[in-house]
Image 1 (cartoon, rainbow, N blue to C red):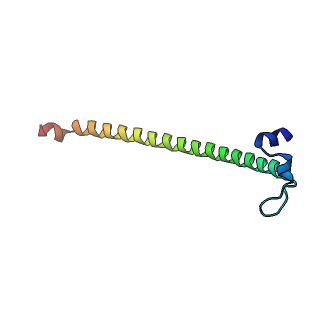
Image 2: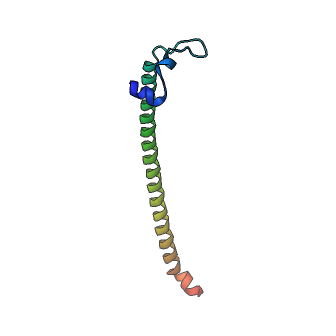
Image 3: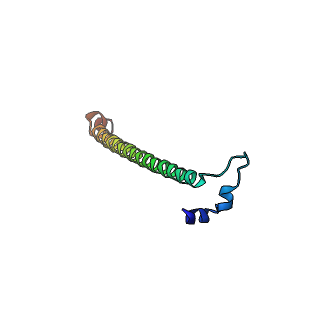
Length: 92
């Protein structure tokens, strides 16, 4: 913990000095640890949300691709049946 405080620039003198609001920094390392734990938990939750969003988008893309494929097949079938119809053949 001391190494982490040193890397973050939190010295013992800063922990003992009062805040601007007059409150002391006592328990600062505990607040730092709880803050880091909260940050880690929020980060993990955001990662899960991003994975869910990514999976939803992939599912939507797959559904759209399937729909576009079916529409292309239907257009192709309609155009072939229209070109082969007796009316079309007699009109040309």
